[in-house]
Length: 118
Image 1 (cartoon, rainbow, N blue to C red):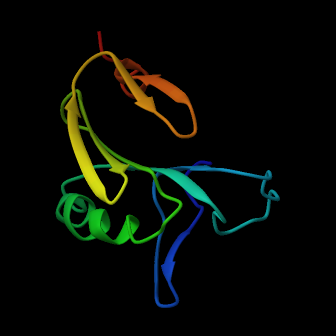
Image 2 (image 1 turned 90 degrees about the vertical axis):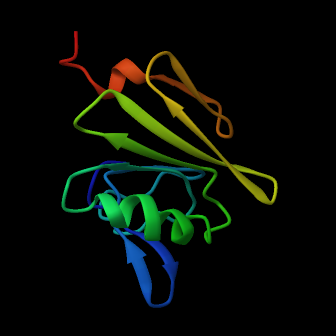
């Protein structure tokens, strides 16, 4: 799901990530919130960097359904993959090759985030 869908953290907190993969039944075209977000993606910008790598990291993982939080750097080829591993979180910085997102069983190449990069 592209930009524009909300991820609700709690009654008072929600975020609008750059992309969301929602698990389960297809949402209606007029849906405003992901009901079962499993992957959340934020693209860093200078204005939002501190919030995306700090506050949002902790907040997103308060949602039990979220298994992966990808932070994509716009200024250099780098994806930070935060992943739920039981009760822990693991973090990988990936600059090339595949990123395995399981669940739900998706593999995406870093190059796919940087289509104009040669």
